Amino acid sequence: MSIDKALFTRADFKCELCGSQENLSAYTVAPKEDEIVICSTCLATIDSPIDNESHWYCLNDSMWSVEPVVQVMAYRIYSKLGKQDQLEMMYMEDDVKAWAKEGLSNESQEPTRDANGTILVEGDSVSIIKDLVVKGANFTAKQGTTVKNIRMVAGDPTHIQGKVNGSTIFIISAFLKKL
Ligand SMILES: [Zn+2]
Image (cartoon, rainbow, N blue to C red):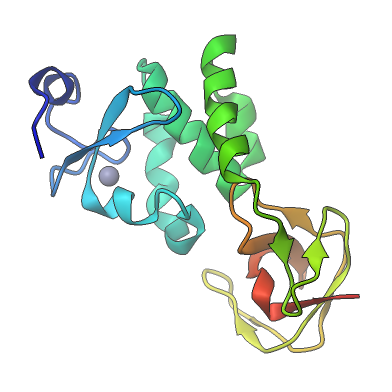
């Protein structure tokens, strides 16, 4: 890896998303060639932030970065996490927001499919086909539970968002059956 001095100086030799100084590398924010400095923890789930949702609380700080390229990453990660409140709070120039959305639409072309390969769309009702322990919440989503009015997760066809036991949770789409 060639270290871009200007980039790392801008980042103050810290991860621009979470502030960690461990295992830093440059990450290109497609479709442009601008880069940000991120740590290995951020890199591990940057494409699938749901896999480490609690780590991404770090965006509560970095979403206010003055660097458009950092705002773009924060916007994309919040979109994938379904954090509508934070998205509405973010201040971004129109062209920066367009860049953020461009990356998302490129990634989200794969349809979301249930256990049988049936394509799921916004508003569908599904049934859970196996007991699922809900990370972060204190319950198990039982096999046979119906989830109505599901929502898609931007850029991530492997999960949907839905309400179970009054909580909005992410569910792996392969554990669902369309009703
Ligand atoms: Zn990081």
